[in-house]
Length: 267
Length: 279
Image 1 (tube, each protein chain N blue to C red):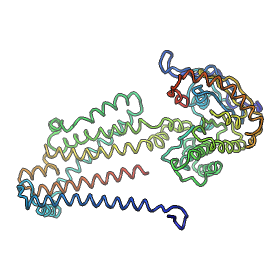
Image 2 (image 1 turned 90 degrees about the vertical axis):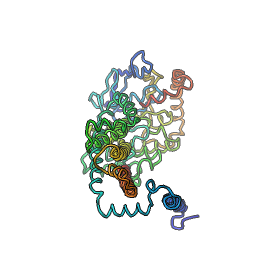
Image 3 (image 1 turned 135 degrees about the vertical axis):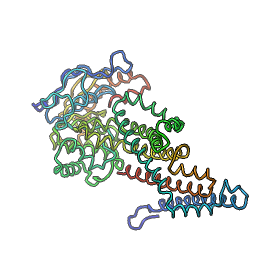
């Protein structure tokens, strides 16, 4: 097959096939989710699963609409997003700054990289009781926990990004007279930023997870707290509706952050 | 030496990596002295690990010698001299996150060229190496030969009187490097720069150089300097002339024993050392 205008092979064919393949896989993914809801519906209405455990999805949907319409979620959402924003700001600023400082010395990299990697591998959420003892049941303990947990992927990736810039690039820049500022702005930063952006995205995700998670365990407000509160009040349909709502928020936030990461890497 | 002025003066340079007794201890250069004349093209040739790249880095102020001195155009070298000396490195020295034109302009930013001048100088340098059409390409979109042309354009745009080239065509195939060598000979004959050119290739050395400094095996020092008495720019016919062949054979004779020695030093199958040299 030859393109009549350029005489070259038709370039669109493989791309079209790839797009068709992607369309098909999207269809299967959507079908899978629809199937889950159908099974849920059948289990709740036909197979006699206890209504307290598994409410009718139609009732959940009605509750969800009611939550959105009434705006009762606003206060909890503000609490959770506020905690997330402060926690992420702390861990991003602290992790990137400390990571950069450590990356300037081979010795400090050798000391801290394995140390942070080891701490990163332990479940910090286990220390939640301590965080609550130190910071109370309010937002402060969620912020501290979220910041502590998200600090590690950020600092580890920042060390990796700044610490493993090809020394040839530094030599090339210095040979042409690059100042320290030039070196940072035009060599270190662009070389390291893809890895750092990945660390920031990972940090954001774990901050979100740990904040909502800790709200369900020990808290006075926030989306996670509200879900547990509804469970204790046996309002199962409404609790499910809240879970769906929180999932939608989390998916949206992660999509936004992934998009920002991709854009940052392209520039 | 045809010219009277000395551009680079190397005196009694020693260099070692690591400390005596350490496993990584290497005596790279021993008592090396050399003058490079103004406007001269000098090739450094020698076996792997003989210290020729080390000497080049020391000449350009990118490495400090263990002892000895280097003067470039009358000033003592103890750090990079971006106004006087530009480098072309072996490969992949362009910043992959910048386009070709951005790479060239960035060099001038580092060097301190006024913003108003950069675009014109970058365009001129790109045209000189025949890459005008590829200004907006990223290095990854270019062939190895084109990347080296772009790196050369970046060095040319800096308009330094001295150019130090560290095996700039070392990673290219034989045919590409032949063409680049011919183009380089023409380009440099016009520019009247002082050039030191490190190479592995005997043919490249004879084709490009006014003089060839042959290194001994490690610990490296200059064994002999051979004069290539042939006007620039060199014609492609030069390669097939009897003069070229006899000079090449003379170089081969000088190098052969040193390469044998170098191979014995590194031990059969020890490839770990070869990476040291460009460092």
